[in-house]
Length: 84
Ligand code: FES
Image (cartoon, rainbow, N blue to C red; front, side, top):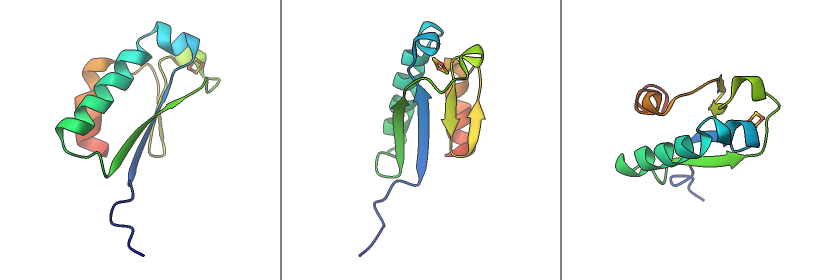
């Protein structure tokens, strides 16, 4: 069986209360828009998570094996470019 269509990039975006208050909902939307615009829907998945217990660093994004703290919407394009 082929794995050609298995996603190879995973982005987890905390949607806990503190992260949402600091823009996590918009971050989720922006990551999904970038993935779609780059036609990466088969190779990348953007996934919501519950609180990751890093609320002091909200909003929290986990991109591959990297934890990204206080991520801003205007950083998403660069992150997608660099890591995905
Ligand atoms: S709400 Fe996102 S880390 Fe707690």
